[in-house]
Amino acid sequence: MIEARNLVKRYGSTVAVNDLSFSIRSGMVTGFLGPNGAGKTTTMRMILGLDAPTQGSVTVAGRSYRDLPAPMREVGALLDARALHGGRRAFDHLLCLAQSNGIPRSRVEEVLGIVGLEGVAKRRAKGLSLGMGQRLGIASALLGDPAVLIFDEPVNGLDPDGIHWVRTLMRALAAEGRIVLVSSHLMSEMALTADHLLVIGKGRLIADTSVDEFVRSRSQQSVHVRSPQAAELAARCREAGATVRVGSTSRGATAPVAGPDAGTGPDVIEITEMDSAEVGRLAAAHGIALSELTPIRASLEEAFMELTRDSVEYQAAGATR
Amino acid sequence: MTDATIARTGSDHRTAFRASTFGDALRSEWTKLRSVRSTFWALAVTVVLGIALGAVISAAAAHGYARSSVSGKLSWDPTGVSLAGVAIASLAIAVLGVLCISSEYSSGMIRTSLIAVPKRGRVLAAKSLVFAAVTFVVGEATSFTAFFAGQALISGHAPHAALGDPGVARAVAGAGLYLTALAVLSVAAGTLLRRPAAAITCLIAVLFVLPGIAQALPDSWRNPVTEFWPTQAGGQLTSVHPAAHTLQPWPGFGVMCLFVAIVYAIAWTLLDRRDA
Image (cartoon, rainbow over all chains, first blue to last red; front, side, top):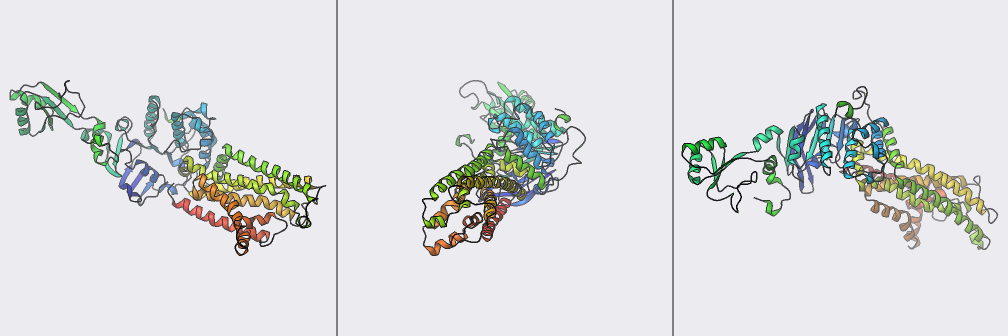
């Protein structure tokens, strides 16, 4: 188990991580999700003893990382696949790491096989492609066959094949009962890989929830309606307890009928807190003609953006809604 | 992907794993040192400079001996002449020592290393011990070879030295010891400054530039510098005929070791406290 209690990290006047508490359980892939600059890497660096917390503490298997007697046997980590000496051969890179924790040479050959790098073991690290470098980093994390695995943006720079491979590997590692913590700034990636989500923004914990729960609670459903009697329908819906916005600002989930301003105008309303069947029934009951009735489900990506909108570090001026 | 492909084959090892030791860290650092090409090149430069340059200087000095002045003949130091190349080769050792840790900072490898061995003092101790041992072996081999080659070239043209002469064996062996102390100092400097260029510049300043500048100062300033400047003081171990205003060989080397120890302690403390 990885357990953080009131973790704070300040760099000068910048607060990178702000009062973060969580515990990560085994047997599932935990996605560590947040926009760039949210504090994901800093948190991982604190878990791994690279950075000292300004306040609070974080433990792995009940101990602070620096006190682990055989760190690589307990925790495997990949923070930055390029964090190696470019002039060293892939095999020697893994060998020096293995030796530092008393892991036998035969295991180096084994992990090279697992990640499919046997063929380039003699190549110097700087001669490896981005994808091969990433695989080498993952190999080093697997060296000690650890019960805890920590990966920072492991699919960055990988081709679709590589992404699929990493995803499968993460799930297999979790299925073996390990703790797998994977960071990403892409919700869509996490939806495919993770079982549980820790969402952070500006160093603060925003959500600690299962992926299913997150999808259910965050991806709000709305109904996009076009009607010549839109104003009347809006009134009826409001009476029935729904929230109605006149002049829909459809958030791109569906492209409304073509036309320069097809998505807006007085004949378009957007209804939330009421499903499309209910809207249709209400319209029929009051004899209101409908020219369009579209249920809209916000994508996970939108739910994530909605959630972290206030905590995005760098936002393009045009991106604000 | 099945269990067997990720987990180690064979019986359950996880219950059996032992705590990692300092010996593990030593083996790891040895692998790191021998697996990069810069090690090979720097050590080759040390050996070649130390022996070849020493031979050239010995031959040239021996041929000039007959024409030199009386005072020149009085201060004739065949041991020092044959070891002149080693003194210059020390630059290669200093650069390699700085690089073996600062290259980890410039590449980011240091983070990988400290995740593998979070006891940071252990990383520094293992790294400096391995590099010091390699330097000691290469340094002694170079200085003894340079000595014998130099004396062979000198004999017949000028008085030459033998290992049995007073102070000579100590001076030749001392050249290797001087390089070893320098090796530890450069690893510490690399740890302290982290950037290869900054650390190499600082070390060259300490080794060569500042003592040179001191020669331009008035006597009252120059003498304490030549006496106590760490590399000047340490260098006394390699000289047979002590010059004026210098320490005795072993006390001089002691001053250098004390300086190395202070820099090392600062490097150790900072490595332990700083975010990597």
